[in-house]
Image (cartoon, rainbow, N blue to C red; front, side, top):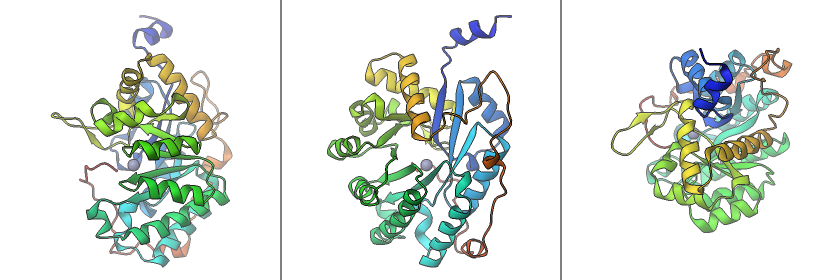
Length: 312
Ligand SMILES: [Zn+2]
């Protein structure tokens, strides 16, 4: 049997971090995460979309300490049936569990007309401003969804005085991208960098020190043959970035993993592959469920549609 080291070099295994994954929407998590580890993933940032998703994301992160790190948020797609007091309930829940959150996300704006029909641009912006305020108060990085709302998203982030923001799966204009980079913010590349023109251009135009990798799993990717993604598909993001940047995968892995460690303050919390240790106390804290947050889960908001395959 080949030694671990030989196996490593044969498979071109790099240390990678999936910086945006909806683990609460995946099945067979044990085997999926084993597969992710086998592909070299050393950490996953699991993003929450609403109250139920945030709770599940916290539970998952407690089950896989030092490997899965929870971000708590409220996805703009969930705003359709929300009123202000429900938004406050979500904010309250996040604030009560803030010590466990590595970041705030997924939050953001979505100006696709089907989304705006359900939640106006003004309401989306109001809500995003509140979550950004929370992030700034606790000095948390933010993971942002900004489909067709790139300029407004950046504006709100800057107005809130946010130090660390990643514009995930960015497909916006080069002019906005330039301002994102100049503002010190980040962009993350998904497996769509293999084929999606706008995303490919954005990745190409983003300097390596501002680039992260992600999967946004379980999103479906692919032109022609489509596949349901998992964290292990981060190797597709890696390969696409290497090809677009014309540098080798090892360098892309090194840059993006170092960026992710700095961005999410992961330096001392990722488990070393060579030793096991107890998770930091904060990841084992109980999940706090406030009465108001419970109420915010109205029957009108049954959570994410399970068969929704769109970009998120
Ligand atoms: Zn997402």
